[in-house]
Length: 308
Image 1 (cartoon, rainbow, N blue to C red):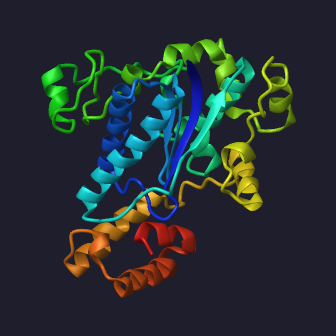
Image 2: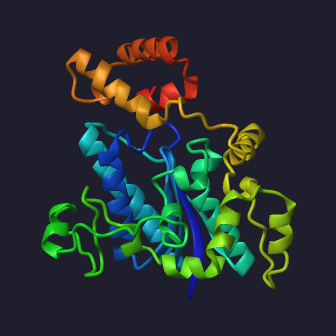
């Protein structure tokens, strides 16, 4: 029997994408494996250390999807960046959703993930998620026009012999468009109106969300940050709540992708290597000290970008 699930796969020790090419390929892998595993994706958020999503499938299909997704992304990442060994944390997080308010809260959490983690000033300004693809016309945004629709041209941008349906379409950069592989129309139905959607994207977490979910007939735990971020400490949850108010975001703050770009362009080439993974421990530590001096970065960010 099919159900709606929230899923999350995490990679705390490294970053999943070091540049825009990684983002494109990981998004394409997400779409391809959902199709192959017969998982109907609704929304997703590709973060630098984890991927959140909402998918409709039977339980065995969504479990298989999470396992294969981790394997395929690891294979791509290790081949491109000349690395070995596991990429993701063991296991995955899976939560069955039941009840309109429960589902709406889970979808909203995924769409606002960039905001929670201080990567954007609003839910709409984080580029690697589905938030900007909903109610585009009503929110005054230009339509996303596919640039690549021919199966032959799409196949050239995907891994060899990757099956995909006829309705898949790509943007000009070779990334599959979320409007072609996610059921965004049904998601819009849950929000009912563009104005409600806009409200939910800026609404603060709190007891009101929980009271709404208690109106559902199902006996499920309400969606909260603590439920969907089980590995985080209390302080991390506090930071995520602060992120909802825009307190964590700064336009001058370097993202993980920014730091990786500096490492790969300025430091790795200086050692005449092709990848940060080819540097030895002492070389990486030396780069970390210099990054800390130059940019005053948090040790945790330096460690995951340098794979320390």
